[in-house]
Amino acid sequence: MKVLISGICGFAGSQIARYLLEAHEGMAIAGLDSLARAGSESNRLELRRLGVKLIHGDVRVASDIDALPAADWVIDAAAQPSVLAGRDGKTSTRQLLEHNLQGTINLLEYCRQSRAGLILLSTSRVYSIPALANLPLQEESAAFVLDREKAWPAGVGPGGVTEAFSTEAPISLYGATKLASERLALEYAAGFQIPLWISRCGVLAGGGQFGTAEQGIFSFWIHAHFAKRPLKYLGFGGRGFQVRDALHPRDLAAMVDFQMQSGTKGELFNVAGGQANSMSLAQLTAWCDARFGEHKPVEDGSDRPYDVPWLILDAAQAHAATGWKPRIGLEEILEEIAIHAEMHPDWLERCEA
Image 1 (tube, rainbow, N blue to C red):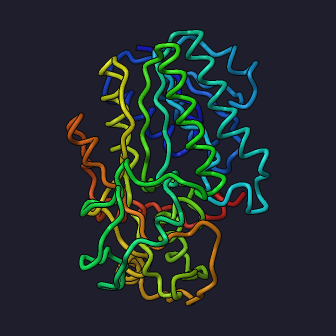
Image 2: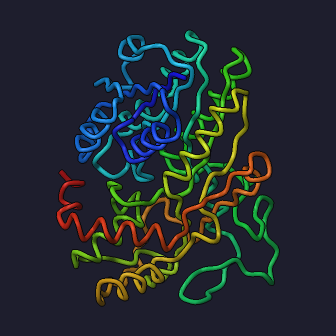
């Protein structure tokens, strides 16, 4: 099987490539990456040693895509990954749209012409921010949890937010580009019989992630705590009770592997760590305090665009259809990041380069 991975030198793309090479003897993997993101160079060197064919190119440039080698499957792991992209002063709105939407269009055209299947990595941030902000929540063990005494909206259950939850705007500019990419991919799949799977991923987390405060929050928080950098609890009373779930990229890679091996037109699933792999920032701080020694964040109630108090994805539909479930638990994920922080004390400086 020939596999092409866009954004292969990023955290998700590089981890998926490593997993597939370990799982399948003789699998040919090629990867496209612009190498624009700090830290990607270190992944490039390792992937070359593993035999990956690396192509320096940009998903935004149609001629770069036209020159790519033939593949049976394309894994779209290229994106501007920050929910604040387009509003953070680091990425313009046009750059965001070109990366996350035009890039997907170019890959869809490649798949249409070459008859390749597509695995689109999407995001939990396609779900409606007002609907998430209005969830009935209560406080429990330094975290927000769903209030069991109140009615929950459609698309929310004990396991979290399901695929049926509202995707009404606003969902952030970043979320809108990913939702639009999903819709276009579904149209291409129906119109041109392109095999397609869409995975709405929760927060990816693990050692070696280029974490920032806007994305990769588990990695960023642990590295910053270890380095005794200033940390802030923003919004929601400034206590750090907001909750997310974590997914190790090797668990995502296991789903990608299943999707490719199925050889069929697939479905749209939440692919996430779920309730068992979730915690609040306050709980994460307590974990770091026990691991590294106390380091108190500043309590700052200032609101930040697109923040939500609670977002845990329910991946029950994926499990029912494929048997997939995350195998790497939260404690293992956090410890892996902590060890990486100890081995690379300058990691945040590298990520900010």
